[in-house]
Image (cartoon, rainbow, N blue to C red; front, top):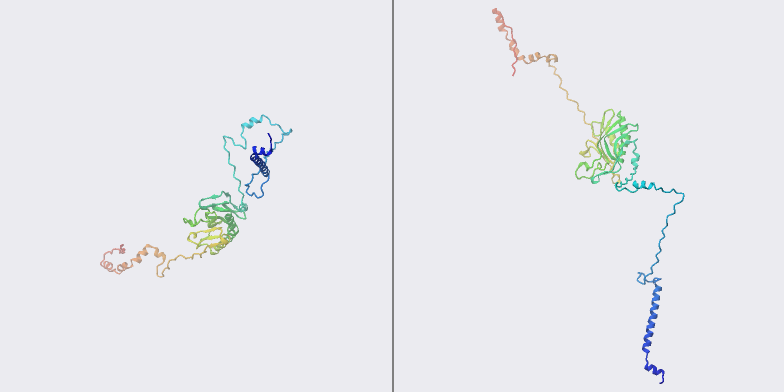
Length: 365
């Protein structure tokens, strides 16, 4: 039996088997290369992979945070005694509220004083601060005081009756007006100021107390109605009294119109015929209103005198006697009696006693 290569290839053909094995070997090598490249690509992101859709990035290693431990207690520190522990257990901590006692609310922080409040000292006015008022419809305000009296430069006090609730700025303006303008006016009249007649101050209402009207400056505690200024000698300066001299009222008019942004008096409307309205309303371009007509004083009318006594009248002493009055009225009745002496003379001639003549009496009707 002979053996040759062509016979072997013819009898034992394995070309197909060899080509299939080669393909499998090639595929295994290619797969290994691809996996190696992917593993290497995990470390670096593709330069054009903007949205991260490529191979996922490797997770970074998580390093455990190192927590610092407290320092050991120094040897020279005092040791905690065991006796204080029971006492501490029986008393609740100051920081932690006890189970039986509820936690107290923290006090509100103190409100800082305004510049006006710091300037309005006791040497200028007796005006203690009051809490802010929050009323309906924007009524009320902040930085409020109760103006009780105004302290004059000579330390005398002008009482505000009744006390006025105002904003600090309005109270300060009223105090300056009385101290700098009204004191010289009272001195020119020979007296000093004792009281300020407060007709109205804070009141939550509309203008002129009209329902639905715009909020008045009185509702903002920014207005004061003044009716009169009383002097120490008992005299009262009525700001709208036409019996007061015109020059006195004009001086008051010029002083208030220079200090306040709104002045309403007689002539503005019939709501302000008996008092003067003062306020510090803020308007555009610092616009001011001064409407107060200082009317002329009322004419002095002399009382009517009785008519003169006629010359033909009898004297007063004679006219005062009732006999004279009856005689004057019954003169016409006496004339016939005086002209009839004939019966008397006839009786005398006959020798008979004549009866005394009786005067005629007036018939009353």
